[in-house]
Length: 231
Image (cartoon, rainbow, N blue to C red):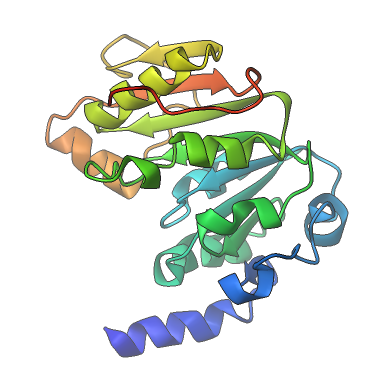
């Protein structure tokens, strides 16, 4: 398994659609592509959507295939998983799909204000014991709003009702605008094509009979997003 991972890492370094950045490279500094992703990486002025915690990159690749006029960037620290989506994009010539390997804690070092149009969180670790590590915690949402355009949206798909409810509580505590919310995405009836994309893990959850929840909300609101009093 270790040899397989090393081979994937080596192959991924040859992909033009992958940027790898260590924490040391962006600690207290901006990445060279800061504010330049459209021209400097994608070579296209289409709006940019981030998938944070992209795993194997299924959502990034499928969204890019659906919306060729837009750009999609999957972000994760686990390169051996990301390799699958990056390789698929290369093999299929999907030029509007790219990948960034870095820690999401460092994400605000990569993008300028207003540079990102949408953010997707697809089945992130719910971090049931550590609220501050959740990708919808106040700390992370404050990072996102530094580069998410005004009126831009955050999408959360999860099998964790705890993460769904927690995120709702953060939204309500801060008076953020909710555009869509359901604790049973497929149970409520026919859904949109983009919401029907299923990752490897999502299909596993569905096979186990778990409902999938979904939230779409905006970050426009108070100057600083804060944690709710109680989880």
